[in-house]
Image 1 (tube, rainbow, N blue to C red):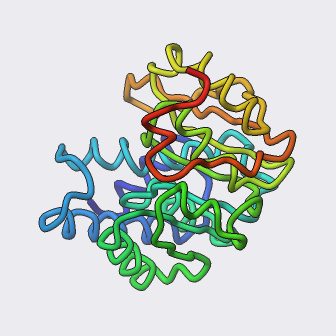
Image 2: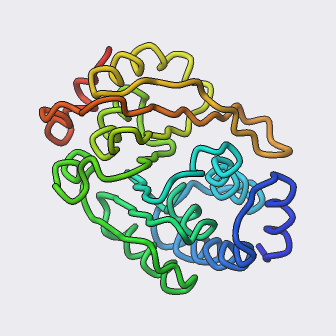
Length: 239
C-alpha cells in the first residue's frame, strides 16, 4: 500500500492531519502487514479493506471536533494500535499512551514508533483494570478511547477511571450499539459519566454503520471501580 493511495483515501474521507501523515501511515501499514505474518495482530482481508477498516476508521474522529481541545489520550486495549497509534501519527501534538495486556503487541508498536519517528507515544503493559489503579494514569487523560474492545457497559468500566473530570471516553461502535445503549447508560452513570449522542463515523465507499460514542465525565469515578481484572466482563455493570 503506497502513500499515494493512502493520501487519496485521506482526502476522500476528509481526514485532516500533518503533511507527513501519508508517509507515516505507509510505514505503519507496511509494518502491520509484515508483523501480521508471524503474530495475530489483525484478521486477514484485502489490503484496501484493511486500510479502510483500521486506519481510516480510526481517523474519522478527527472530523468530529471531539479532539479539538485534547492534549492527552490513552488507548485502552490498543492491540495493533487502533485508534491510538494512528491518531498519534496524525496529531503529533497529542501525548498518546497505548496500553495493552500483551507485550508482543507493544513490541510491534515500539517498532512503529521507531520507524515513523513518533516521539509523543508512551507504551504501557497492563490490563485495563490494573492500569486504571495506577496513580499516574487514573483521572489523568482528556480522552480515553477504545475500538472494538468490549460491550458498552464493560467498556465504560475500562475507560472512565482514566478520564479526568470534564474529559470524555470515546467508544468506536457498530450496529450493536442499539442493543448495548441502555446498559451502557446505566454503567456510565455509576462511573461518574453521562452518555452523549453518538456521532456518525462513515468511511467513504463503505456501507459500515459505524459511530463514535462520547461519554462525558461529569463526576468522580468511585474508588471501587474498576473492579479486579476479569470482573467487569464476567459481572458487567448496568445489566
